[in-house]
Amino acid sequence: MVTAFQNTQVLLLAAVLLAACAAKLTVRERAAEAPDHVHGVPVPAGLARLTAVRRSRGMTVGLGLGEGVLGLALLVTSHLSVRLATTVAFAAATWVVGELRVRRPDAGCGCFGGLSAKKVGRRSVLRAVLFTAAAVASLGAPLAGVDVLRDVQVQVGLVLAVEVALFAALSPELAELLERRKMPADLPCERRHSPMSETYATLYESAAWAGHENAIASAVPLDVWREGCWRFVAFAARMDDQDVELVFAVSTAERDRDVRSAVVVPATV
Image (cartoon, rainbow, N blue to C red; front, side, top):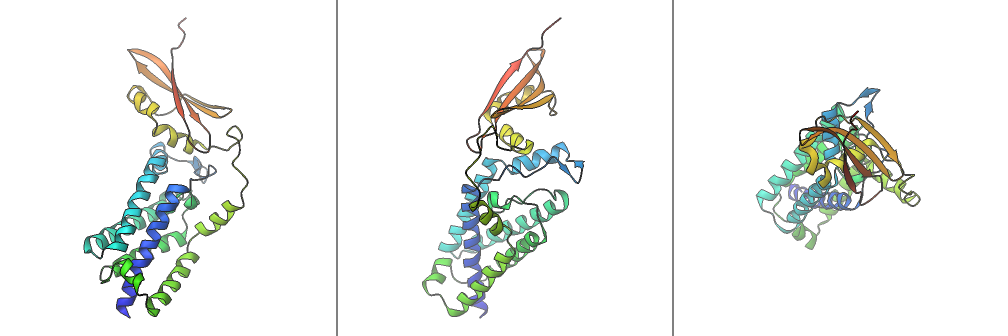
């Protein structure tokens, strides 16, 4: 029975990692999340930017691909290094979820991409802890996931069904998925709600920002405004020994957001 339980954890973790990979690659976070204040207190600029980077598309895709590789590895090999890497990954995820619950109660964990955009609750923390425990239990499993599937025992099927039901009950993403399926088509970009956290995430990972970042004098923008499908963010900058303003135009579209930049030289009197 112990061996069957250990083999079940391999299947469970592989399924979770592959599901997380698919969600991160296909489901984007909705724009209504990540306010700039928590309980009326402004979020520190450094922490806000860290959260924006965590939510950036590049970071999400990278994490998703890493989870996909681990999930496939659990299916095809029983090598201890794969099991250890999985355990470390889930332990790190548990720490991150716990930190988010304490330090950023407004931010989602992003565990399953855009489906995990709502604030981290106790269920998400408990789920992460249980996944870590499952990863530890899988260290002694003698079979790879594919081998377990080739000859599924009754005990494995029962334990897997119970665990899937338990983790489903601990997953707020299911409600979010059902809600999204009922949503109408995407709004036009000029009417779409686009929070500042989304704008900053798009800006910071753009080529326009990378090309001018060293010239920016202050991370605090001089002005921010929105016109139609664009949000404009102006920064004080220093170029060619002259004080200028760098204005970035960040698209507010749902997908394929573009970023453009322009240098504005203040008029001299």
